[in-house]
Length: 167
Image 1 (cartoon, rainbow, N blue to C red):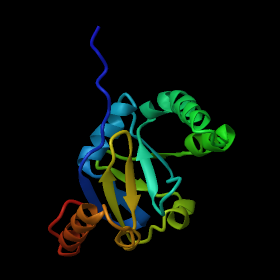
Image 2 (cartoon, rainbow, N blue to C red):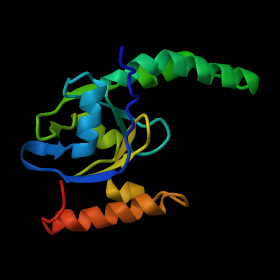
Image 3 (cartoon, rainbow, N blue to C red):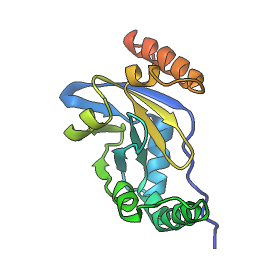
């Protein structure tokens, strides 16, 4: 039996909002999301628990949630900190299932424009088991440690505005 290779999201992408209010999931992210969902073209989206952005992943990540809750709870107990497992479970499992077509086009559910601060552009930043989706203006507000993502976003935004970049 072939071992299952873990899904990992890396790199960056950018999309301007297109006709009918659609964004385009970048090709590398699209493939990983599809692979995670065993071929299903379903993007899982949620509000990031700490930052003013969205978090995206494929359906396969859901099978890791209980172990993640157990680990977070154990760490909190070891540190003698409170841990609200129910709240965290609601954050993890409260994602939206958003279909996308073969070209990666998807319609962002209305509530995520407000929750993620998204407007007419979206920057995608790989983060291993998941990726973040940023309004470029929100990303620009992030402090030290975000310089590479901020520069990549600015570069990809300029390319998209000039019609030369992948959307």
